[in-house]
Length: 360
Image (tube, rainbow, N blue to C red; front, top):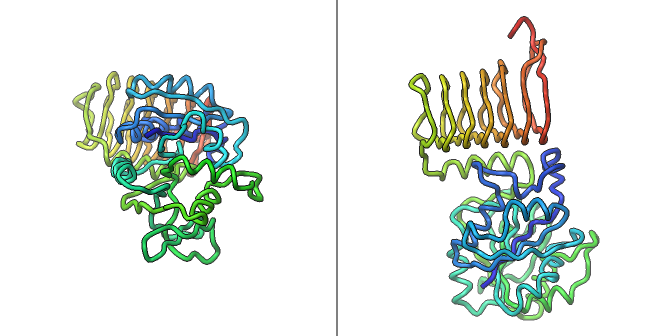
């Protein structure tokens, strides 16, 4: 089998972070989401992986390389414009050939990996298997309808009156018959070739299309709130370890990872949390569900349930920062007038002076 990761798209829902960076490279628990997808496919025994790339192709190539660090072979497949998921499949035919494959959206995070799905599909005569999960608001997703034999009979995109609560997750299994489908369908009103239309074509032409109902959590990290939620869930799954330096005046609980070269001085860190390589905390508080990337500085400041990307500094802030995404190379410090509350989504290279009063 082969793997196909879709890593194009502009990530507009994560602006301003994605003005200067591919959305798939924003980290959760200090590891880019795209790396987690590659590892999930690798752990399922697949080593030949294609990545469909768009405007951020060069950045993704620099970050991922040829795949050697994961023991996989990476092939890059350029997509000139985001013309739909089925279009991404269509342009990948030369790479995929006649092999069965798993298609995985590069900004999705899923609990437990995909090994059980790969095993089930490999042992079956299915032409396609679609990962579904039960959701509370199915009208916001593509929804599947199943028959009495547990086959998918219909897919509906964001229905006003959902016929089920089974939503498409963004992980799909196909054999080579999918190329008949993507070549038969027409663009939707959005001008895109929709993967739901391609799957519906398979169903209507009597191919075997079955569901795989995922029981754990799943997050599409397309928005800031979803990114923070994914970060929280992944942090809870980490095996904590202390590889950096923690002085005797600091308090670091048992659910915290401190990476090599990090220094924690007269600070408190409550887990689950991760402090990246060569990051320095001085007179600081880091609360639960927080990821601080590498080469950062947090001094005389407090933060919780947030993500701070590499090479950023937060200094002399007299109120706690919460529920925030802070980009790369950001400098956040205090200026002279009293603040009320802080909540941020800061893009790379931001420089924010917070107003204070009377030295507070």
